[in-house]
Image 1 (cartoon, rainbow, N blue to C red):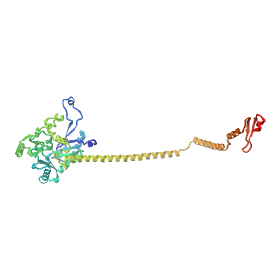
Image 2 (image 1 turned 120 degrees about the horizontal axis):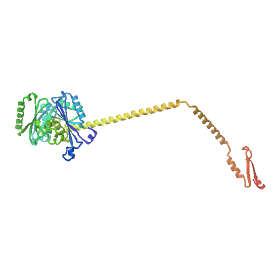
Image 3 (image 1 turned 180 degrees about the horizontal axis):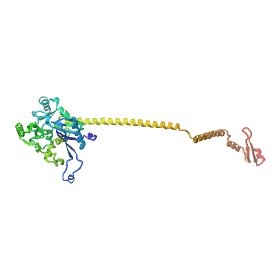
Image 4 (image 1 turned 30 degrees about the vertical axis):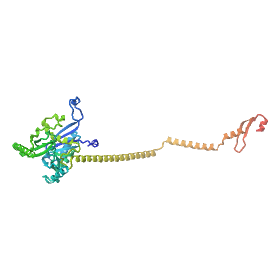
Length: 444
C-alpha cells in the first residue's frame, strides 16, 4: 500500500485461486483508456477493467490442498506480481477444500443475534469433529430467507492456514481472508433465486466434489476419493442419492448439473474481458473471480467465512495499521540516516577547510623574500625616517605668518616697509623702508 492509498483509504484487493497445479489471479482496477465503441456511443464499459492471470505451479509446491514448499510458492506469487505489475497488496485467497470441514447447522428461528452467536459458540466447542485449539473456525448465516437461522460453520487446521499466510507474506501479499474454492464459486456463478443447485466437478488429483448451492450460500459438500471416481456408475449413483436426501430433508426440488455447464453471474458478464471468453473458459475462472468479487465488498459488509484468526474487516484494519507503522518506522530511520550523513559530511568539509588553510599558511611562512621586495622595504623605511625628521623641523620652525601680521598691524599710513631682518629670536628686528616725510617717521 502506497502513501496515497493509505491516506484516501483505497483498498486494492486481488482474488487468488491456489490449486495443486495452478494459480489464477483476478484483479479489478480502474480502466485507463476508453474503448472506441464507448467513445462512439455504441456501448458503455465498466469503470474498472478485469485482469486475469494464470500461472502453472511446479509439482510439489501444493499437494492435496496443503502447502509443501512455502518459500518457492511465495517466490512464484511474487514473480507473478512483478511480471504482471499488479498494484494490489492485499488478497482474498481461495484454497482447495480437501482439508476444510464445512457443515450447515440449523438453529431455532426465534433466536436473536446474541443468542444465535452463543448457540454457534457452543456448537463450535462441542459438536465439531476437530479440535478448536488446533483449527481456525469461521461461520456465516445463509442468505436463504426461509431459513434465517441456518448457519454454515467451516474449520481448517491452523498449520494449513498459517502455511498459506506465510507463503504469501514471502511474496509480498497480505491475506485478508482465506476461504474454500466452493465459497468463491458460489459468489461468481449464475444461480436462480430460491432454487437449490447440485453441482459436481473433478479435481486436479482425480477426486470429485459434490456440493449444493442456494442463494449464494453453500448448503452441502462432499469430496469423493479418486479411486471411487473411476467408477462412473458410483459417482452417478452418489449424486442421485445426495439429491434425493437433500430434497427429502429440505422439502424442495433440486437442479443437478456439472460445474462445467454453469454460467457466470450477470454482473460479471458485463466485462469485455470475460465476453471474449467461451462458456467453457468461464468455468475455470469462477474461483478467482469469486474471490475478487469479495475483495470489492465495502468495509464492514463482508460477513463471509474467513479461515484466519481474525475476520476480514479486522484483518484489513490490522494490515493497514501494520503498513502505517512500517511506513513511519522507515521514515524515521530515513530521516535519522539523512542527518547522520549530513553531520558527517559537514565535519569532513570543515576538516578539509582547516587542513587547507593550515597548509596555505605554512607555505606562505616558508616562502623566501625576493631582493626587490627587500629593496622596496628599505626605501619605505628611509622615507618614513625623513618624514619623521621633517615633522620635528616643522614643529620647531617659527610661525612667520603671525610675525607678518604683527608687523602689518604696527605700520602706519605713509610708511612702506621694503625689508626686515631677524637674526635670532632674542635680537631686535631690523626693518628697512621709506616714509613720505619726517613727521611720519617720527610718528612710526
